[in-house]
Structures are given as structure tokens and as C-alpha cells.
Image (cartoon, rainbow, N blue to C red; front, side, top):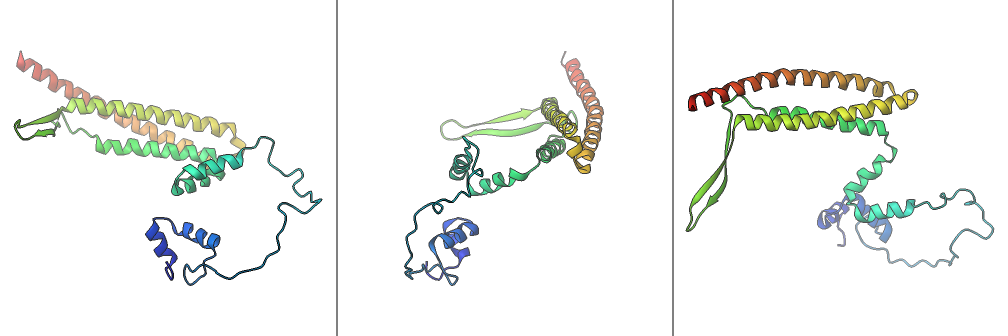
Length: 228
């Protein structure tokens, strides 16, 4: 690996640039490449620990029974590097802001579902091939989803998602009022904003749902009348 750049080493071994740089410090690579230092330095052996009589650590140690080192060592051992970076970045995060991020993600998922699971009308059915057999036995199997089946699935999914969103909004509001004097103006303004948007979505969805359900029942009723 002589003469290789840190970026090349990272690409070759599938690690990040920061990991390679930590190797540099650990193994004493020089700036021109990854040549290891062969210079011998005579050092005087020192006894481990603080000098005799030193009392710097008195009263400044971890609380009795503290497991910080064990806990962080456990995470460092089992969590992937990218996950560890995210995990440790949350140490200084405000719980209220973390909950707000979850609310935004839930709200975004509900809005995206409006497009993905949209049912145009009672004729909007989905036909999909799910199996094809070859050889001695030849055949195909198709799955058909009628408009009312898709609409029912959509309503169930949206109802569950909105219930979870409402629960998180209530948690946010409770946590906000519990620490009202410490909350920022932005944190206080968020609750009014998300409540207004949620009510707007639920109102619009209610009108659309009632209209779609009415049309679907009319279509189903018409089909039943024709079959009798």
C-alpha cells in the first residue's frame, strides 16, 4: 500500500475517510503515503496512573455505578459506523425537536399516500399478474383489486396514520406546556401550524371520502340490480 492516498485506501477497503485518518494516527503513517514510521525512539518507562499524591480526580469521577463506558463501548462495537454517527449526534438534541421531526415525517407520509393510493373512480381497478407456470403445466394467475377494495385499504391506512399523528401532536403539546418557559418561539408556533394543517387535511379528506363512498355504493347497487 506504499504511496497510496487515504481516499484510495478508503475505497479499497470500503471504509470512510475518517476511519483511514484514525488509522494514520494509530499506526504513525506519514503525510506522503501510508509508509509506517521505522524511527526508533528511546522513551523512559513511566508507571501507569497519576503521580504519587495527585488528587485531581477526587470528586470528579463518574457517579457510583455509572455505566457510560460500558454502554458507549457496546454501541461502538455493534452499531455500524454511519449509525453510530447519527446515534451520538442525538446526545445534544432537544426531545421536543426530535418529536417534531417525527411529526413532520408522519405528516409527509400521509400526504404522499394521497398520491400513491389515489382511487380515481369506481372503474379504477388494478389487474396484476402474480404467477406464471411453465413446463408440463402452463398457466397464469392474476390478482384483481376492485376500486372499492383499494379505497377501503386506503381509508384504513389513512385512519391509522392520522391517529398516530394526532397522538404525537398531543405528546408534543403536553411536553411543550410542561416546559413552556424554556420553549422557543419556534417550538410554540409549530403546534398551531401543524394543528391547522391536520384539520385542513381531515376536512378535505372527509368530503372526498363521502363523495367517493357514495359513488362506489351507487355503482355496486347498480351492478346488483342488473344481476337480479
